[in-house]
Length: 376
Image: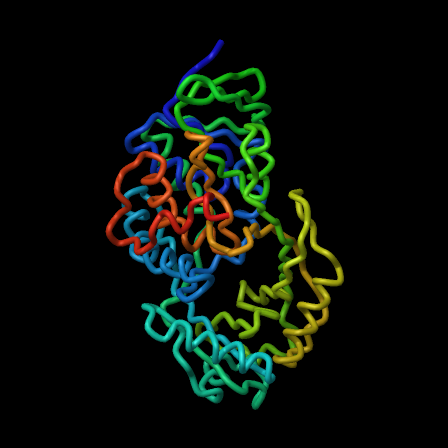
C-alpha cells in the first residue's frame, strides 16, 4: 500500500526535526529516521553552545538570526528556556594563536555579536582556572549561551506532531525513485509518494542522495572528541562560586567549559571518517586532557566519560540547502558542521522557504543561492 505526503524528511536529528517542524506549518510531513531513537548521533553528542561569531560568514549570519528565534520557539512550543547565558573566551597562548585571534577580530570587526578584544589579565580574572600569565591575547563573546539541545529537539518533534506531522523511527529509507512530478520513498515495508524529499541525514546525506541517483555534494564527516573530566579536590579552591566561561583556544586546538563538578574538554579534533556510529579515540582524549592541563595546571588526570560525534562539511564549510535543477524535488539540507544546533532556528526557516518557494524571512541575512548545491 502506498501512502502520500507533501514532504518526506529523511533524518531525525536536529536538522531533520527543525526543518520538518517549519515545513509542517503549510505542508503534510513525514519524517523517517533509521535509528529506533531520534537524535542518537551528532545532535546528542554536541557541546551545545550558541556562539555568535562562530563559523563561516554565512553560518555566522544564521547564528545571529537564530538568537531571538530561540526565545520565540520556547514560547511557541511550550519548552523551557533554550539558552542559558555563558560567556565565551577566545584565548591565544602562543604565536600561532595570536595570529589566529588577530585574523578573527579583523574579519568580524563590523559584524553583530562578534568577539571583542579583551585584556589578557581580564580573561584570566574571568576564568580563574587559567594559569596566571598564560594568556597572551584574548577576546570575549558576551552574547554566547549554552543550548538545551534535548529540550530544543523534543520541542521541534512535539511541534511537528501537533501540526499533524508523522515521525517514523526505526525505518531506514531503502530506495528513492523519481515518479511523475515527485518521488516515491521506500522505507521498510512502507512506500510514500511525495512532491518533495528533504535529505537531512547528517553524515549520511550523500548516502541517501546515492539511493535517489542524485550526485553527491562531497560531504566529509569529521570525528570530534569530548571528555568529561573531574576537577581534582586539591584544585577546587580555584573554582569560583559564580558561572565560569567557556574557553576556546584561538586556533581551535582545544576548548573546555564547566559541566557539573567537572569540565567538558576537547582537543577540537577533526579526523575525516566514513559515516558511522563514532567512538572516541584514546589518543584524542589524552590530547585534549594534556592541552587543557597545560593552560590550567589543575592536575587533570582522570576521565569520567568520553564520547565522539561527527561534524560534516563540504569544502567551503557552508551548509547545503536546496535541489539541483536536474533533480527537482530532492532537496539537500546538510553540511551544518559544528553549528547545526546553534543555527537551527534560522537555518530551518530558510530551508523551509527554499523547499516551498516562499520568501526567506527578512531577519535572515543569507542569500539562499549561496547555500545551493549548484555551487559545488
